[in-house]
Image 1 (cartoon, rainbow, N blue to C red):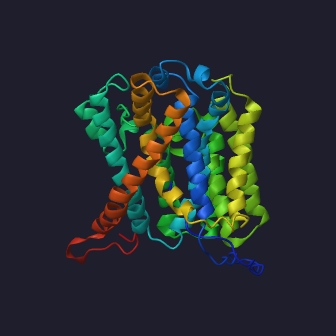
Image 2 (cartoon, rainbow, N blue to C red):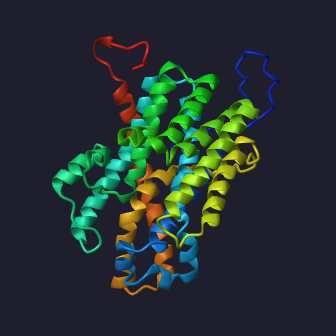
Image 3 (cartoon, rainbow, N blue to C red):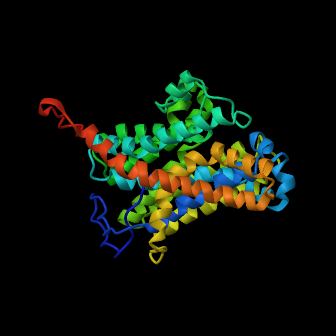
Length: 380
């Protein structure tokens, strides 16, 4: 969920034997920002019209009855999370290149926490104001959720979507300790991708829960595919990188089908495979430079809104649906449209008045050191 920068330019000369490929010149990658918003909207539509549970209570009826056609497609919107993970692998590899471990740590903390804390406060207040949608949040639950580590603690999640942040944090930790710590290079990323792939495959037969938590076999292929696609973007196509992408896609479609179709037979396994394929293909198009012309300035705003929108859209959206549809009697389709737009507007406010001023301040504060102390190896 990080913000992007580069794009492809001229193809470099073939590397000499035993050397790393030469990097391509870099520019901005606005298309990635658009893809991130598409993934977020996929998840949003799923939460509003593709599932039951609390949202059915807000609609005062099944979304499948209110939106019979849209609902059949929206059940696949949950795959927007996996789409995020492919993009995240690409972006994290890109943004960590040439950075120290300290730089990487500060950028991730400053990127994730300010908007997350605000979303946490908003949803906690909403749960107290309208407990018919979400039960009121207890003080101990709110406090532990401030850490973003509530899931491994076994505590209640205040933000329903924050389970994906725990997946992202584990990816950041693995990549930071095994790649960024020694400096990001083509060779180290390739080695990391290959070893992680092997570990993910072996996890299925290990029966070790701790190993599963660290290696994340159900999500690893998506991140690894994104890492390899960034190598293709930065250094040009080569058989090894495309081999990693192909292996990641093969494993990813299997993981997604087993996870999203096996327990939920109302989904079509062929559609699951198709959506996973489109996600990989979309990021591959960016890597190959096929999206160079997607240079519209609004894509920057789209990318900026994605993270805060993702954080607030689920529970707060259910509150808005309940007020508009059940409380004020607004028809279903206008309620859906107004809810999505209102969540995008709230996301813009969080970006403008929280992320923009406080993210850089937090990053600078984390860089402060007493007595000029510094770890030259870690870059803190």
